[in-house]
Length: 239
Image 1 (cartoon, one colour):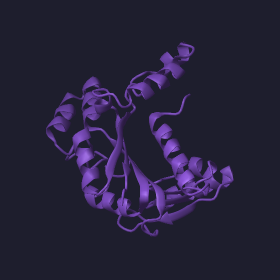
Image 2: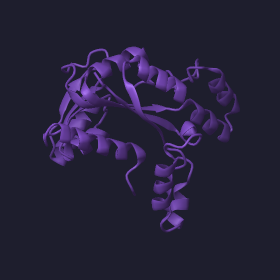
Image 3: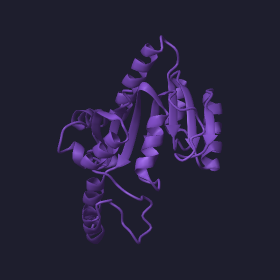
């Protein structure tokens, strides 16, 4: 499979960071990095990676995965309220699947922005409210779809909804700008790939590569971008 839209952007950002640092390893802070899905990959690519994660079980899994991969990752137990890392030093901060679950999204993003060095970037990946509406309607959960449509925060209050909020494009842009960051790129992630059954890909040679190419081509094209399963922002700290 080809690199997806998020990976492609991060690869380019880290290459630019390495150049700014004269060939030294880019410094990456992965907040809410869990068991290290991104962290291990980035450490293997030569980045100096710190993961801040509240779950001790996830950190234990991360340490095991890093050891098996032969990489070193600085693992810190904490959250957006107490990152436990120096401010203004990261070339890239990852916040993937974080802003949907924190109590105060503006405060969390402000904390992440403070961790970035001038010229660095924050990568934010969040659940899309409109995609959630469509997916529930398609699955026959019409009442839930309507409730998500009527709730500006995109939350199914009173249910076991694991998310405190979901985002749309204008709301995400506003949040990023209010944190003092500039929006360099806003794209969709999971536009059609989440809708294509695996059996279809298995039965058609070349379909997986074609689907990956379609995802990349559609990632920045509205209205397809605006109904992707997830929204991805690369935001820059300019001062």
